Image (cartoon, rainbow, N blue to C red; front, side, top):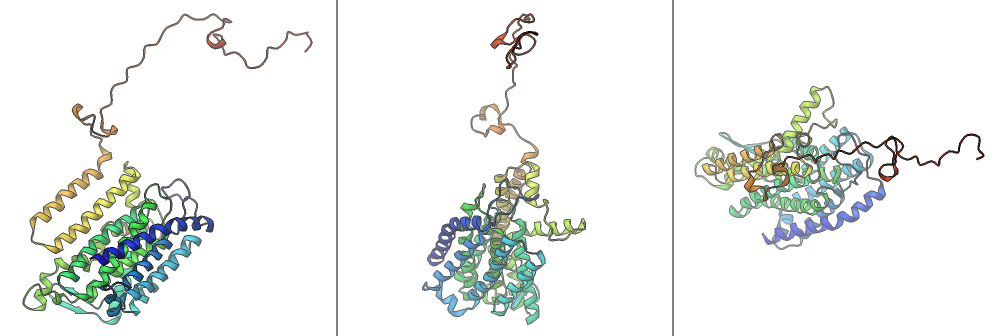
Length: 432
């Protein structure tokens, strides 16, 4: 755990320290696009924050390679090199898009190529645990198609949600934190070395997001751009692919009996793994709704609009910061709720806790629809917007006697008009 925490801290430190120089470079390079109709910020803000995040990723992998225990991950697996190759490719495409606004289909092709590069180096899904059937081995083509689809969906889900300051980096950090706890439990508690790469990827991803987040909180000084959003989406997908398709469910040996029974009993354990989008369910839901909405209107699924979930929160009446915090809340509830259920699916307290916090989330979500007023005894401790407003008593109007025409009033004004700023004209017939 100490080595994972050290890797996380170094990744965060490198990302944080490089973001300032990257911001200056983005301004000089002209990576400050004009404000579009769907944007919520008021001033042009530089992009290319993904440059700092990519170098943070490289620093994290380099440090992990020189640590005693984490060095075994590089010695026994080629997955870290596969991740670095795919990340470098997707990062380069993102940098070009931040500067030159490349076509959406070209970006989609680049995402598929980056996923294919990782598959060629061994980062792919080999089998799937299916309830009642057991571990189903996938052919090479099936594993490749499933891996590419998972990478593309996750990248675009993260990219779609990157619409408010600090939203994408915070939500992915929450998802990576939940995934790190799960992967570390599989690796440490059950002694399964195949889970070590996913644990390392999650720790590095948390460091990348935590290092960039201070510069990206509202009001943001720099945006991560597509170079950052696609990068963290790919790293998140790589961790899910690594631990889903590389670990045999029977290796957990949680239950005695046949392999089918073991897989059936461990389905709650594999909920965050078989469906990695459950830990980014909010961006995934936003992605699906955006595709349906745009297709229904006869537009391209890649055409940008202002119909995302975070835009709707702003339309309801939430402030920028509160909309981001609400999205954080729901992401944490889904991610850590799935994690808790995977640990102990028989506990009723987990279900009740999820229901309780969901009710709180709904209240916070609908809060602008009704503005409750606190009682009189709580006026001093609640925010000003929830205090009861005192009725405004109009001041009595002092009635004055009318001033005759031509008589000077206050400040030299007459009863009819104010004193003219122009000099008085001389009488007709006199010389000027």
